[in-house]
Image (cartoon, rainbow, N blue to C red; front, top):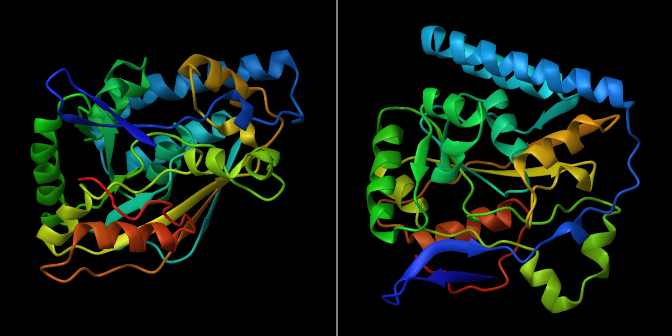
Length: 282
């Protein structure tokens, strides 16, 4: 995995996945076009309702809307493991935009999202309303401020969810042909590394880190490469069935002077994604 560089030579916090459409193996059972269209209409209805209800109700309404979004698309949510306690830094591998919806539906969390999400129709506005913390990956100097926002939220007893890989990568699940046929070098590019920057917030706030492994029972959920949001939403809506499973690992409790890089490696190992490169950049 690599990072982009600015004209001044400064490393930009924008990990590059290298994954593409070959990660989606196909062969899924599909619903009729009419049922897929109905799901899309239901999805639009939930988004509109969410934009009205969430600013008024907050709290439980956010989780209710997230669960309704998954239900509208026919996505089944499965949670396994202990629930994160309030004030936890929740860290997870990243496969799809659905990951964020599933995390919100499972536990009260604020999301750390790339600033591009703001421009997504409906979803961007809803993310802003729910208190998402946006990170500008093209402006490295703002990363310190973002870490500070996450630290403040943790100290206030709010759980914050972040995808430390920084971008989406190919899904891994039993029978995934894409995972088993790549060369060794290609497989490394298909696995993200947990970037350590956001783990500093947990160290500074004295907050537990809760690693979560996210898996899907179909590679069609993968939102990777040059995929567009609209194409991904339509693909998911067309599936006869799709399940997303979130498996929570035991919480990690960093010491006051803990090294964020070691914490990132430990969290990544907890979700079954062993880093291929041990020297993690900030």
